[in-house]
Image 1: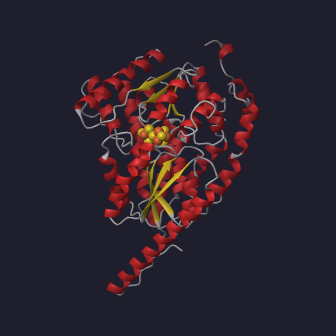
Image 2: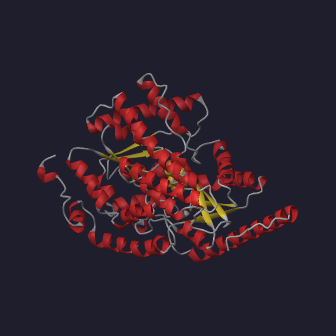
Length: 457
Ligand code: BJ8
């Protein structure tokens, strides 16, 4: 890259956005909506942990500081690889000294543009992601040298074909059955091939040593997130669900080494809060597990509605939740490159996306997580037109009901048009959870003669 081709990053945000080819006027319109939402959803909360300030500051300059860092890496010869799914083996990207980014759109703003090309009855995550690119609204997207898709759902597969007309796009072939040898071998070969694709793009060899270091880095990220999640098992909960969702969302953008450090610092503060019995919601507040499709920035409305209704979100069975970090890559027994890649491929096959059939592991996971986090109820969250997650609800509902765990399904998009209806349904659900907690506490007190505090209200 010649000096003339380098993007200047020591400039104000607007100059930088012009250089990377953003549509400045529309980008201004997009970004002016963010501060009031962020204020209402996040900054209005009481008693937040101090260490959350790092993640707040990230959002406050979302399209400034971090994209400039990414372009600085490009100026120094590193490549940027963007993806849209938890099945993106980021380890290869780190190992090649490139920058991995997850580019899933969570905003309503670019959807109208996307609908000029994609069918309206497509999931909003797909439309928003596509819209961000075709409308030149996202500096992260502008930085990508390669996009990596995957054969999960039909809408994404077809969108990647169209996206490839704008940016070079490679699609990983993910089999839809994970428990047979043919599928596992196919996925292993695909992951191995992806290593070569990253090497070709970057012009850098991924040695076993580099790959092991990258595996270690990605595992550290997963462990830091698991540490934060673990504190949410306490009652009172030391951090709101909204704040944890923010941390999860930024895990997909931030520099991995810095993110590990900051997230471990947050976990340490939360562990101290748990020891002191300090929480963000009163002890006994109804505890909700959210299960379903991912939520990317600025998709905060379901968490916000639940927590403003007097409940607290204690975990997310989602790709912006436990599915992202639960399994580690076990490289300890790997004695060859093939072994190492196989353990990597195996780890990814443990992500229980609804694109798999059968997908019993996910159903078991939801029940297990509800127990582990002492959830009083489950909000099953489906993005509109996501047939995979929508259809899988039938089995999940049955499994939860068999355990006596109440569940409600919310199917929504990125617009605000259903806010009122959502609020009414969620408030009714939370009231029901409070009432059943109170009646359980009353019968426990009757049996033992001990007064039990039952409600967070
Ligand atoms: S591993 S959940 S990140 S595919 S919501 S685009 S499935 S129609 S986001 Fe996902 Fe990977 Fe699976 Fe996770 Fe399609 Fe459904 Fe939309 Fe989805």
